Length: 155
Image (cartoon, rainbow, N blue to C red; front, side, top):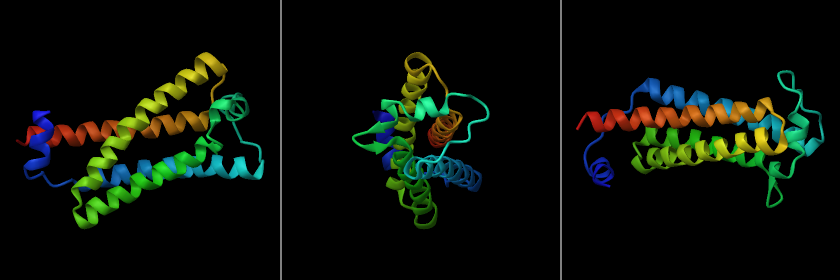
């Protein structure tokens, strides 16, 4: 708690451009991945799954939709939000935007772990697009840890 208080009250090290670029590119990959799945969901198109044979089974499972909304659409909104938060932070210096992005990356990483578990243990199939989303969420989480470490080391 003390470290969080220090992080919020003290001046930050400037966010390096490599971090902004990496975060933005990863968010864009996640956005494109989720957009593809969302389009396929709403048009009824077949998902081209060439690494694993279980994409259709995963995407047709009850776990692919929450409260009537496809998880792919939730992913579109999430990755777009991550990109917009980074732009808001980078262009306008809004601190809370980056902190919200970091918090979101933690939540997305945990959610991805749950979804991978469901694919492996419950559905017993893998979806390459779902795994790509898990990879992008994990990468955002790792970038968040790197950024936080950079801020705490500079104190």
